[in-house]
Length: 428
Image (cartoon, rainbow, N blue to C red; front, side, top):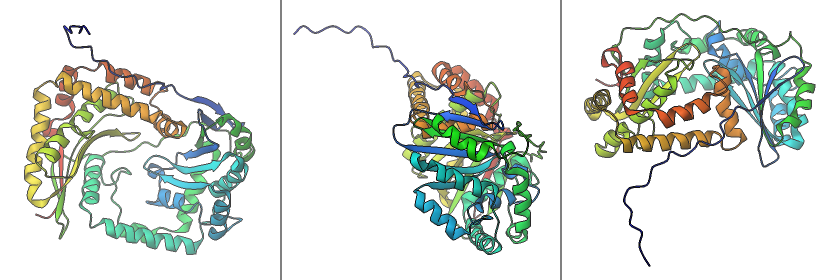
């Protein structure tokens, strides 16, 4: 057989991320937005109720997470045991979700049980009773978890970073004390719930096969609940008291390892450079083949893992990298971290590494849109942070076209050592 002579290497083509279009939007008669995520293949629906009821909305610290955790602990019609029995009888799952900016409830149900589950969801969302006995048990469990967390260097370092970045009085930077749990009351939870858990402060996502078929049931149980028509929730103005950059040490007695956390003030999702920064951070420490993983884990063996993230709350962006290391490797680890950052500030990334990162990120985007449940998770961030319906389409284009010189420019803009917080939690 005659062999064909190959004169040049074939062109490398970055794979496509696939269909990243934003799902269809609908609304109930009281204007509550409903996002419909289709293409499911089984008779399951994932329905999430999202409220602008996160920690930033608190007047009393811990009220947001505690009110959310108590939703299924008793209602005006049923006690906690009965609610659990009702959930079990439908085969559904009800999961509480509470973070800095939003809170809510995720339900996963068989389509044929939708009516029963939505009836129960309305009850726990809008009619919780916050019984004293269940509240005391919840508080005891949370205090125990809190005290356990006081022994973890990773928890202490995370708190120190956000306190430095946002300020001790800011909801993003506030550090919880045991006294916060002790002073919280069911009256605080009732006030928070009454103010924030209403249809006018909510949107819904429905994911699964034929999600539009859920609209009549949602209309029955949520479209007729009126507390004024839905309006875009108002976001409170937040004051930030950012600390001076530098080294911050937090003593964690008897710890056999230290957490090293380095971070900077970043940018929010509406900044045109936000997606570029995502790619740059991925190169540094965002995946298993990143610079930091290859150096500090694979070559030096100082840690099991090291990660870098560029993220944002509604009002503030951040860049942070973190790792846990044995105390004797702490200083050497810091030296290698700064060495890798310095290289990216001085040298352009090679074409082979750029190709690897492009392919990895395209695969990550494709996985986000692989199935309706994954899509529902992905688009929640778009809705919550008003990132734009074409966010992932633009991100895929950024991944495909960003250049090595742009990466170098980003590192010189956002990874300045003089503007960094260098957090160490451990023993001296």
